Length: 583
Image: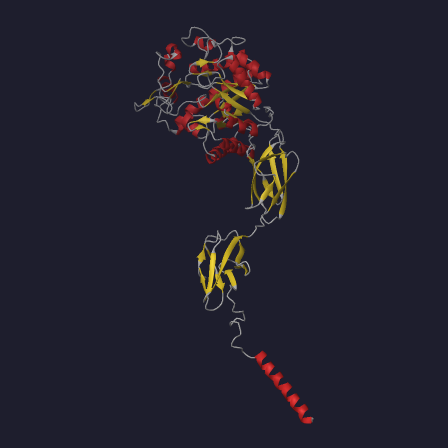
């Protein structure tokens, strides 16, 4: 019995030992590889190893798919990958190279007679960016200022904020409410929500602030009827005044003298020319209108709408452009041939004109000066105008002028018989400019003696160009206090050139006279040698004026104001009337 029990226990422990050895040993048929992975034919990993950070794809062994989402910044058309799979297997296309994953690719894994085909599906990760990068208001020609989650907008007094187009630049792949390009009521704070591609939202608040009502000279020039329809008939003047009122202008610079003609019937012109009577010398002798006098009718129309009328003596001392005036072709020289303002210098060279183009009567001659004073005072005394204006031709003379018989004789008398020197001589320029300055002062005094409230204004070129080329010394005019509105002709065709010019103007304006910026209403070009000005450029000029404290502009000239793209700017910049300054 004891032997039987012993043999049974011995058999049990023998079987137990063999079993443990089998569990802990290396079975030649064990289906594993050196990495502890089962040696079943399959992809173990699929990694875009060159991305930072690396992206490992999800592998579905049932559906045989490879799926991954990569950053938007990655080039999906040129992605390199590394794959792991059983030893002895091959993958086609092979691992370690870059491929175009923008469309599904098939990767075939083979070992012996076994084969599996996986299909890649690679897309982009959803972006979480939800920022507003910029906000613009195209109809207002303005941009919003972004500070954190607040967007600020300043608009001129009177701007209609109930329906404003908003354009926004936002983070890539995000959306925004309200949509960019839509119309919105921004008369009260507006919430704008930007939603990222991954669904994250960010809220902004748009707040619009209305500026104070402006005080400034808002003017435009009205040339003679050869260049504009404004003054051709009573009906045209009605239309022109209505447009000025609609666009919130407050001043008209209306031509009174050009091409040896006047807007109104001038007895002064008739008395100093070969015109038969005062009406013959008008731009439109046959004008009838209401009163028969275009200036009287225009004043009534303009004043009824609250517009100032300032008479612009455009040609000033200039006779004509392009051809030399002679007693045979000029009504004034026919009676006064000695008024011609050209001659020969001391070297015998002919000095014809400014730029060999503009021909002047002799502004240094007392008879010519008296004629111009009388011509201006005729309108001052006979019409209810608000002011008069000279420009780059009054008081002015070309820098190469002064070599006519009268002026040479006058200079020699005052300089011990010496002939005038070359045009650029400093003292010779100063001598001639002083004569013009004296005329300007006398004209100012005459106007103010008749009506102290009548404005004396001028629109010269920028200084020092004006002095060097046309002997216009407008900083001195400011010091003498004989120019009340200065509309310097800042006619430039880029914002950089305009800023440089207006800054130069400001440097002289601020250091002469009283420096009151309400006197400065710079001349802006609407149509010139480069055609109709760009609307955005025009808006930038006006905005730059405001940034340096200038609150008024004068536009050359009325015709382009009928263009819709110019009107868009004026309506945006002048949405309400401005107060006319008190001087």
